Image (cartoon, rainbow, N blue to C red; front, side, top):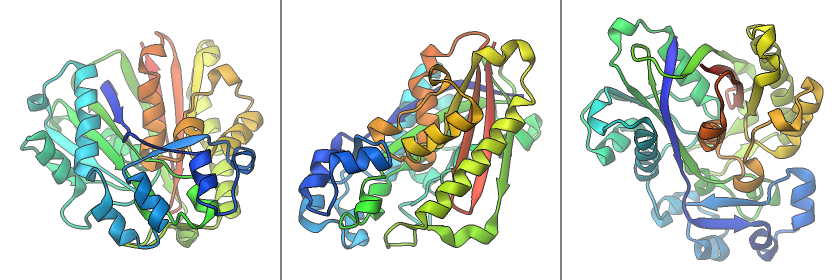
Length: 328
């Protein structure tokens, strides 16, 4: 059993709404964006004037232009999680991080976050793109509790607008920035229990979604969306088989926040009602590995005793994973 003691998230203050994208004169409109992906706005670590003037043609320059580092945004999310958990940073015994576009290939992003928090603990990256949260929690779940500290901090800093080509309307409309954090334990119980985790991969499709180093994000959109819908449905089916009948009416669903149209298709096919579907992609865009956990963080106080949360995430690799959470 794995327990969640707190979660948090951080978003940079600069807002990219659909009007901003229209004004870039890249052939998009608010109506076109809402019809295709259902996203109204996103937030970014980049100065808006930088995007207007350069359209981020050189992604390497975006790292210099950023208002925050990944270490800074990750630490902000971590501090929010510590506050929710009513824990001090000194009680954290390990830090695990992951990101679609790490700021450094070396050192581990986790070390930069730990440095910002001023903590000296084992810190390392466990990255599976947008499905990183499932990979991280599944990894911890498989470990013996005697080999783990009481509290583990899992942070996913996602500032992927740095690798977006803002002259390409297809990718410019998708991405937003967010960092998420979750504090878990295998030894200290809490009301929030992770009862099952899983991670799978289909590596033959690795070329279908890419964020190359210092280059723009690229994907085969239609193919990837079809894969995401199919795999999310299979994950929902497996998680439902683990839920007792008396709890079926108390189930909430959180999917990978790629776009609202994809999520609505999944919910329609899986017969998930609107009151069961938790999401934020319409307001914040695709925030990569931080997307699904940020939805959980936003709804932390609205998840009631007896509720079950099915989290299903899909990412580059191609990878897909699940996290089943119950509140006692």
